[in-house]
Image 1 (cartoon, rainbow, N blue to C red):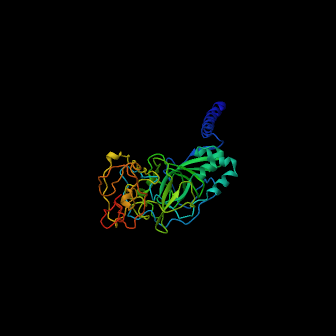
Image 2 (image 1 turned 120 degrees about the horizontal axis):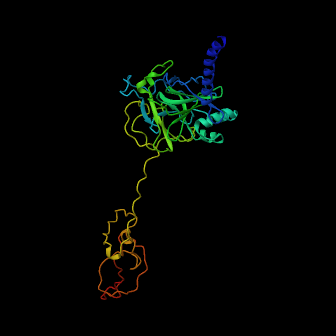
Image 3 (image 1 turned 45 degrees about the vertical axis):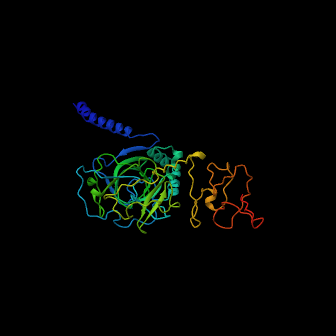
Length: 378
């Protein structure tokens, strides 16, 4: 009897140990880091702009002026959509992000240094963003530091005790992030955590944690990648009520005024209706004008001689500019030079001279030899 009771107690313990061992093995991933998923059933975690969370990859690299309060929410609260999903905005939408001219929202080089001093941490980061470890610095330098202008749903990745954690998150408007060439948030600067687009239905109303003032699930945004990489992002400088064109991968040194500003103001509610705009860097170049085909002398029209005060555009015949026409055969379209004559062709040509008047000479009259002699005309 004692042995049978002992077996009954031992079997469940062994079963539990086996399940735990299997679960632990399932969490191992390449690169030495382990990945776990948290927050999937409880809903996305609400993360204020300055809160690094419980599993940061690095210390904060966020900097620069903060976003003015409620900069993204200028309208009244909205009712949730019928589908319960967040709003969708393309990553190249002008004004989706904000910043200050010539001031980076994140210190990219500091982020690179903090990962480089810890090989295991850098390896975990590289595996999470799907690049090789020696490509982490290039990956980060290709991102653009900006500020979120709306509460944004993302998939976050943290690092706790050597394990990479994955969770759904709502980042507060004003959060400093680094975005890629298609406008997707890829790194959260206050903690160095990699970011991906959200998964699932994207229901911000089910978010867990303390809600900040102005939080509205109906105004939460999901960023979708632009159709193609863009050369620059048009961001809003809300402190100066102006637009900034920031080149992709630039920290602010290349900031300039957009060549074609958006058809709305920088403080427009980015979560409201927006007019359709062409993303910067995707406009098709205008078709070059086709060259005008040359014409034979038979097809050339006879131009009228303009009045002296009429300016002559480039390309007009010489007679129209007040200078003698060239000899026949020198142009494809010879211009008549005055009164017709019955004299046979083949006469010697007179050297070109610049007349004193504005009108082209039609003939040259020489002095009479005698009072009764006829004038000689060439």
